Amino acid sequence: METAHIENKKLAIGWFSFTCSEDSTILFTELLNKHFDEWKKLIDFRHIKSLKTKNELKDLDVAFVEGAISSPDQEKEVKEIRENTKYVVAIGQCACTGMPSASRNAFGDEEMDDRIKWYMDNFNYHQKVKKLEDVIKVDDKVEGCPMNVPKFMSVMEKYLKLFNIV
Ligand code: SF4
Image 1 (spheres, rainbow, N blue to C red):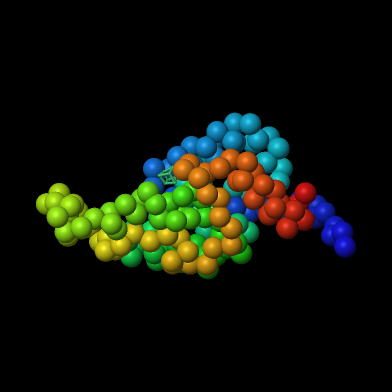
Image 2 (cartoon, rainbow, N blue to C red):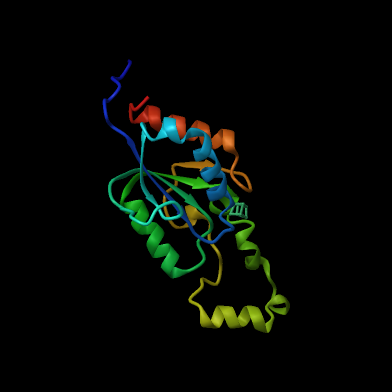
Protein backbone atom coordinates (compact mmCIF):
# COMPACT_ATOMS: atom_id res chain seq x y z
CA MET A 1 0.00 0.00 0.00
CA GLU A 2 1.34 3.43 -0.90
CA THR A 3 1.44 5.99 1.90
CA ALA A 4 0.85 9.67 1.31
CA HIS A 5 3.75 12.08 1.16
CA ILE A 6 3.46 14.44 4.16
CA GLU A 7 3.69 18.11 3.19
CA ASN A 8 6.10 20.21 5.27
CA LYS A 9 7.09 17.33 7.55
CA LYS A 10 10.86 17.18 7.94
CA LEU A 11 12.96 14.36 9.39
CA ALA A 12 14.15 15.64 12.79
CA ILE A 13 17.68 14.38 13.26
CA GLY A 14 20.46 14.63 15.79
CA TRP A 15 24.16 13.89 15.32
CA PHE A 16 26.19 12.97 18.41
CA SER A 17 29.84 12.05 19.02
CA PHE A 18 31.29 10.14 21.96
CA THR A 19 34.73 8.52 22.34
CA CYS A 20 36.16 8.63 18.85
CA SER A 21 38.16 10.62 16.32
CA GLU A 22 35.03 12.25 14.83
CA ASP A 23 36.04 11.32 11.28
CA SER A 24 32.47 10.35 10.43
CA THR A 25 31.37 13.83 11.54
CA ILE A 26 33.87 15.22 9.04
CA LEU A 27 32.45 12.94 6.34
CA PHE A 28 28.92 14.06 7.22
CA THR A 29 30.01 17.70 6.94
CA GLU A 30 31.53 16.94 3.54
CA LEU A 31 28.21 15.38 2.46
CA LEU A 32 26.46 18.60 3.48
CA ASN A 33 28.64 20.48 0.97
CA LYS A 34 26.98 18.45 -1.75
CA HIS A 35 23.51 17.76 -0.36
CA PHE A 36 22.60 20.70 1.88
CA ASP A 37 20.30 22.45 -0.62
CA GLU A 38 18.34 19.25 -1.14
CA TRP A 39 18.41 18.13 2.54
CA LYS A 40 17.38 21.46 4.06
CA LYS A 41 13.93 20.97 2.49
CA LEU A 42 13.64 17.47 3.97
CA ILE A 43 15.65 17.49 7.20
CA ASP A 44 15.36 19.43 10.44
CA PHE A 45 18.95 19.50 11.80
CA ARG A 46 17.72 19.72 15.38
CA HIS A 47 20.80 18.75 17.40
CA ILE A 48 24.25 18.93 15.79
CA LYS A 49 26.78 20.57 18.10
CA SER A 50 29.56 20.39 15.53
CA LEU A 51 27.58 22.66 13.21
CA LYS A 52 25.52 24.97 15.42
CA THR A 53 25.29 26.31 18.95
CA LYS A 54 21.52 26.26 19.44
CA ASN A 55 20.46 22.62 19.77
CA GLU A 56 17.36 20.87 21.03
CA LEU A 57 17.28 17.29 22.31
CA LYS A 58 13.57 16.71 21.93
CA ASP A 59 11.30 14.60 19.71
CA LEU A 60 14.00 13.46 17.34
CA ASP A 61 13.05 11.01 14.60
CA VAL A 62 16.58 9.66 14.15
CA ALA A 63 19.71 10.07 16.28
CA PHE A 64 23.00 9.27 14.55
CA VAL A 65 25.54 8.33 17.22
CA GLU A 66 29.26 8.13 16.52
CA GLY A 67 31.88 6.72 18.91
CA ALA A 68 32.19 4.24 21.76
CA ILE A 69 30.93 4.77 25.32
CA SER A 70 33.76 5.05 27.82
CA SER A 71 32.40 6.71 30.96
CA PRO A 72 29.29 6.81 33.20
CA ASP A 73 28.64 10.40 32.04
CA GLN A 74 28.59 9.31 28.42
CA GLU A 75 26.33 6.39 29.33
CA LYS A 76 23.86 8.77 30.99
CA GLU A 77 23.94 11.15 28.02
CA VAL A 78 23.37 8.45 25.42
CA LYS A 79 20.44 7.05 27.44
CA GLU A 80 18.92 10.53 27.43
CA ILE A 81 19.34 10.63 23.63
CA ARG A 82 17.58 7.25 23.38
CA GLU A 83 14.65 8.58 25.44
CA ASN A 84 14.25 11.52 23.07
CA THR A 85 14.39 9.80 19.68
CA LYS A 86 12.38 7.23 17.80
CA TYR A 87 15.37 5.54 16.13
CA VAL A 88 19.10 5.29 16.82
CA VAL A 89 21.70 4.64 14.12
CA ALA A 90 25.23 3.63 15.23
CA ILE A 91 27.75 5.46 13.06
CA GLY A 92 31.22 4.06 12.40
CA GLN A 93 33.11 1.08 13.77
CA CYS A 94 33.65 2.53 17.28
CA ALA A 95 29.89 2.84 17.84
CA CYS A 96 29.07 -0.46 16.10
CA THR A 97 31.76 -2.67 17.65
CA GLY A 98 33.68 -0.54 20.17
CA MET A 99 36.90 -0.83 18.18
CA PRO A 100 39.33 0.81 17.70
CA SER A 101 38.33 3.11 20.61
CA ALA A 102 38.02 0.05 22.87
CA SER A 103 41.64 -1.05 22.30
CA ARG A 104 42.47 -0.45 25.96
CA ASN A 105 40.04 -3.25 26.97
CA ALA A 106 42.69 -5.73 25.84
CA PHE A 107 45.55 -4.17 27.82
CA GLY A 108 47.15 -6.49 30.33
CA ASP A 109 48.38 -5.21 33.72
CA GLU A 110 51.91 -4.87 32.31
CA GLU A 111 50.61 -2.45 29.63
CA MET A 112 48.77 -0.22 32.13
CA ASP A 113 51.66 2.19 32.64
CA ASP A 114 51.60 5.13 35.08
CA ARG A 115 50.29 7.52 32.47
CA ILE A 116 47.27 5.33 31.67
CA LYS A 117 46.68 4.63 35.38
CA TRP A 118 46.75 8.39 36.05
CA TYR A 119 44.00 8.96 33.49
CA MET A 120 41.92 6.10 34.90
CA ASP A 121 42.34 7.40 38.47
CA ASN A 122 41.69 11.06 37.70
CA PHE A 123 38.86 10.86 35.20
CA ASN A 124 35.66 8.99 35.69
CA TYR A 125 36.13 6.32 33.01
CA HIS A 126 34.58 2.86 32.77
CA GLN A 127 37.01 0.00 33.30
CA LYS A 128 35.93 -1.24 29.85
CA VAL A 129 34.96 0.83 26.81
CA LYS A 130 31.53 -0.22 25.46
CA LYS A 131 29.96 -0.37 22.04
CA LEU A 132 26.70 1.54 21.69
CA GLU A 133 24.55 -1.59 21.71
CA ASP A 134 25.93 -2.51 25.16
CA VAL A 135 24.21 0.59 26.56
CA ILE A 136 21.11 1.35 24.48
CA LYS A 137 18.93 -0.24 21.79
CA VAL A 138 20.34 0.37 18.31
CA ASP A 139 18.06 0.23 15.26
CA ASP A 140 20.60 0.44 12.45
CA LYS A 141 24.36 0.34 11.98
CA VAL A 142 26.62 2.09 9.48
CA GLU A 143 29.93 0.30 9.87
CA GLY A 144 33.30 1.47 8.57
CA CYS A 145 36.24 3.40 9.93
CA PRO A 146 35.16 6.05 9.14
CA MET A 147 31.56 5.25 8.18
CA ASN A 148 30.73 3.75 4.80
CA VAL A 149 29.17 6.66 2.90
CA PRO A 150 26.93 4.70 0.46
CA LYS A 151 25.51 2.77 3.45
CA PHE A 152 24.92 6.04 5.33
CA MET A 153 23.10 7.49 2.30
CA SER A 154 20.90 4.39 2.05
CA VAL A 155 20.05 4.57 5.77
CA MET A 156 19.16 8.27 5.43
CA GLU A 157 16.95 7.41 2.44
CA LYS A 158 15.33 4.59 4.42
CA TYR A 159 14.26 6.94 7.24
CA LEU A 160 13.12 9.70 4.85
CA LYS A 161 10.84 7.09 3.28
CA LEU A 162 9.77 5.57 6.60
CA PHE A 163 8.52 8.99 7.76
CA ASN A 164 6.86 9.60 4.35
CA ILE A 165 9.02 12.62 3.62
CA VAL A 166 10.12 11.42 0.17
S1 SF4 B 1 35.25 4.27 13.65
FE1 SF4 B 1 37.27 4.91 13.02
S2 SF4 B 1 36.95 6.86 12.08
FE2 SF4 B 1 35.15 6.41 13.27
S3 SF4 B 1 35.52 7.34 15.23
FE3 SF4 B 1 36.21 5.27 15.39
S4 SF4 B 1 38.37 5.40 14.90
FE4 SF4 B 1 37.48 7.26 14.20
